[in-house]
Amino acid sequence: MIRSSRLLFHVVLTGFLWAAVPAAVRGAGDGESGIPLIHFSQDLPAALAAALESGKPVVVMFGAAWCPNCRKMDEETFASPEIRGLADRFLWVHIDIDRNVTLVRSYGVRAVPQAYFLDSQGNRRGQTVGTLGPSEFRGYLEEFLDRLEKEPQEIPGGQQLNKTGPEQTALIYTPGGYRGLSICFSHVGYGPLRMESQSPFQVLRLGLIPRAPSTLTRGQREVRTAETWSNTFSHKGDEYFLDFEILDSTVSLAYGLSDVLQIEVEFQNRSRFGGAMDGFIQGFHDLFNLDQNGRKDFPRGDFQFRLNPGSGRPSISLDGGDKGSFSQNVLLTLQHNVTCGGLHTPAFSYAVTGRIDLDDSGDLNGGGNVDLGISVSASRAFGKWYAYETLAFSRFGKNGFRGIPLRDHQFSSLTAIEWRYRANMSLLLQYLLSAGVVDDFGPFSKPSNEINLGWKGEIAKGTVLEAGLIENIVTFDNSPDFGFHLGLSHRF
Image 1 (tube, one colour):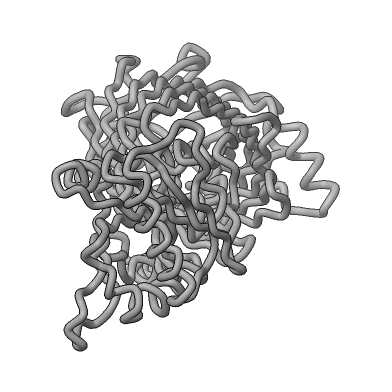
Image 2 (cartoon, rainbow, N blue to C red):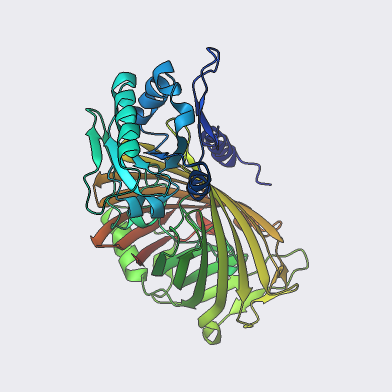
C-alpha cells in the first residue's frame, strides 16, 4: 500500500464523503399518538399491483434528499396527525428522482416535491406541485377521495384535480440534456476528464479510469472517443534516459442496463514515437524562464528509451523498430450506483473493470493477459462546485517489462474539482496519484503525480466536448512532462 500523506489525504476525504447513505424505506411520523404512520414504498410496480387487489388509490411522491422543500413536507406535512389520519386510505410511494430518471421522465416531472394521485387501476387522476401544509394537503386528499367515489372510473379527457404550492424546487437539468440521461444529476456535474495515467511504467497496464458516480438510465447509450498525447523526458547518467511521446487512443460504448447499472466496452490503442512536442516545450520553458533540464543537449524529435536498473536486472534499449503501437486492449466495465446522496452525503458508486491485452509486442512478460481493477467513486455538489474522489486497486496479469520485474498490483487515487460556471460548461482541476510499480529503481519506485486542467462543454444536445492539459508535479522523472487531451461523448 502507498505509504504517503497524499494518499492518506485521499482516504480521509473519501471517508468523509461516504459518511452515510439514505434509508431504503421512508416513514413519516413517530407513531406515539396511536395514529398510523405513513410508510412510503419505493417500489411503484408492487404498489400498483397492491392497488388492484385492495382497491386503494396510490399517492406517488417525487422528491430528492437534497431538496429542502421535500424535507419540509416530510417533517411537517406527512408527520402531522391530520395527514396520518388518512394513512390507511391510500398506498404511498416515494420516488427518488436522482435514481429513477426513466420513471421521472415518463411522468414529466419538472420540479419537486411533486405528487401524482392514481386510482386503483393506475390511472393518473390528479397532481400537486410544491410544498403544501397539513391542512391544505388533507383538504386535497379528501377532495380526491370524494371525486373517486363519484367517478370511480376515469372519464376520457376528464379534468384532473391539480394543486400548486408556493414553494418548489426546479430540476437542475432538463430530461433531454446530457446530464438528464443519467442518474444522480444533483451531486454530479460533467465529471472528471476521462484519461488514465501517462507515466512511463503506469501506462503499460490498467490504471485508474476516472469515473463520476452516476450511471446511464435504462436503455440509454453513450459513445465516447478520446485522444491523449503526452511527452516524457527524464534522464540520469547511465541509469535511465527517456525521451519519447505516447498517443493514447480510445473508443467506447456504454449502455444502461437499469437506472443504477451500466456496462461499458472500450477499445484502447497506445503508440510511442519521437518527441514531436520538443520544440514547443523548449519554447515554453524559454518564454517563462524555466529550467530545460538538459532538453537542449539532445536533438529535437529524438526517440530514446534506455533503462539500466542494476541489481542483476537486464538493461533495456528501445530503437526505431520499437516505435508505433505497443499496446492494444479491450476493456469491459460494470458500474453500479449505490446512492445519489442527500442533503449532507455524497453520491457513491463502484466499478469493476477487466482489461484483455490483445497485443503481444514483447513489452510485457510473465503471467496472463488479463488485468482486473475495482474502483469506488464519490461526488458532492456545493452550489456550482463539485468535488470528486476515486480510489482504485488494480491486479495485473503480466508482471514484467522486458525482463524487469514489476509489482503485480497498484493503488491509485484521483481528486477532482469542477466549477460549473455556466449551465452547460465547466472548468476542472484534477490530481492523479498512482503507486510506483518497480522495486528499487529510483523515481520509478515512487508514486507518479499528474495534474490536469480541463474544460467540458455541452456543444450540442447530448454531446459533450472535453479538453485538457497534463503536467507533472512532485516526482518529475516518473510522470509525463506535458500533454494534451481531447475527447467527445454523445448520449442518446
